[in-house]
Image (cartoon, rainbow over the protein chains, first blue to last red):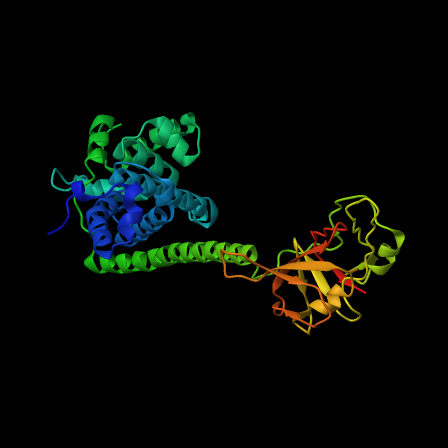
Length: 181
Length: 219
């Protein structure tokens, strides 16, 4: 039987869990889907990328668990995953500033709004088309529902810069989805 | 699409999704591998710490019981002054030689007693080397047994030598021998610690307590 989240030991107890293979497996089985799901939807539903970031998250968790004490291991893991995601967006942004900037955008991506059944995928496509910095700000602010201050801290930007990114991101998404301003 | 609808749509992006089982298993294996060295290194550290603690305790017991030499300190001397300085001939007869070859004249002080002055000869016969360890004197080189007569001859008679012989850890035995010319050997094994207390008998007692390391008595 798959373990439930209430069975998940706190991160502070992860050291004990690691000493027991079956306990570690139970901990892993309970936390992996949550972490993977979090990353999957925030990195453009790209399985390969989500797996890479998930692996980074768990490796980091093993490396740092001794210095961490929390009663909510899933939140702790999601916090690590969020930092990995922010790092990923930073890398993307650097790339965009480099050679990708040379590829002139042919114009804002336009995604047809096909009705209530499919807005989800269209929105994901529109998000993918955003510049990395805007996507990072939109994902962290609206998908993660983090306050602007926290988003600014994660992205190492000022709150004003984040507000600006959010504004441009929303506008780009609206355009991409064919909606009115 | 206005901002409100857009934000609602963004917040609704999170849907249940399961990782691929192959990925999940592969990552689990990777994490297990990654966590094993941590476990083994932790156990290794504990083992090393336990061994170090055992070694320290064992050494302390061995030194305390006389089975091992105590620490040496180059250049430090040697004898504890118990009483006023001896006659000048004693200093010429008894010398301390450091490991580096330097010679230091020891201070051996007779306990003053009316009408008597001890004469102090060399502590060892020619060629015989005694090492002064930390609170010990022990024989460094062959022959590994001390010849009591060679020592007793070094002192003015009557002389009594007492010897704290090597003993099992945690205990200390003491043997006393009276100096004579009989050639009696004291049970001092090679490089084993022997504590000597030299007493000149009958009122001319001179107590020589050897303190420091890396000085040797020789003629």
